[in-house]
Length: 254
Ligand SMILES: Nc1ncnc2c1ncn2[C@@H]1O[C@H](COP(=O)(O)OP(=O)(O)OP(=O)(O)O)[C@@H](O)[C@H]1O
Image (cartoon, rainbow, N blue to C red; front, side):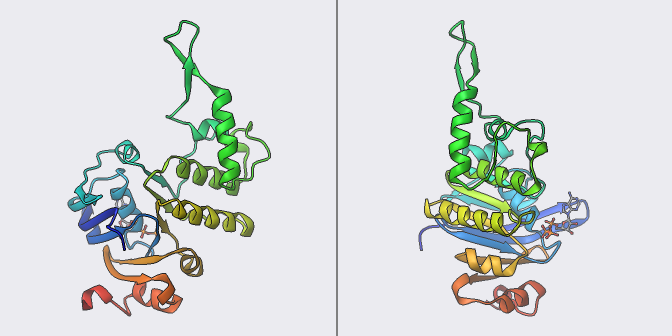
């Protein structure tokens, strides 16, 4: 296997007296789908927040391409090609899907005075439409505000937006949770397509059959620590559940 793209070693994260992470480690390789699983409260979202610049770990080490990494904000992570689809769907409800896709990354064209940039809405709409088609967001129109879309359509806009900008790694926190069967399959196809382009996809999901069908590897968190790692092809739902609940603890045994 290639060298790790992103590695977390012994991360801790305290919120007051709550220890959300207690020495958590995690590894993602380029061009793989790795699922991060664990019971409610295991620390998955906290770990993703620490790996995407939303939160700073209390202690521990992050490495990116083998070099120490410090992320002071989500923009810091984005500058390195790391994108995140959050569980709470950070889309702007009053803007249309194209504007959402380019939020904070607007395409400018020279203004009348030559030096004042104005928004190139046409270029953004064209690129957004191409992108949504490519990444399976089925929208009848890209002119309506996000607020008028269904939950599933909003979700697919959020997924398409983050994979549009991810050049190295994308975190997806429950990306199929709000989706019907057809859209769920589309998102899973998008995940595989992004992986096949050499990007690392980190998937958080409580749906074990889905985890096994789309992942190359699975890492298991329990009580704020990584307790097991599996190759998806070599494991079963029962084994994953055993690791999540503590019936099996590979890493403690190692
Ligand atoms: N901002 C916060 N302040 C205080 N405690 C927090 C905060 N965020 C998370 N926690 C606590 O940290 C622990 C881990 O939470 P986290 O959301 O990371 O778990 P999770 O594995 O993502 O869970 P779920 O599957 O339910 O989303 C929980 O006990 C949670 O209550």
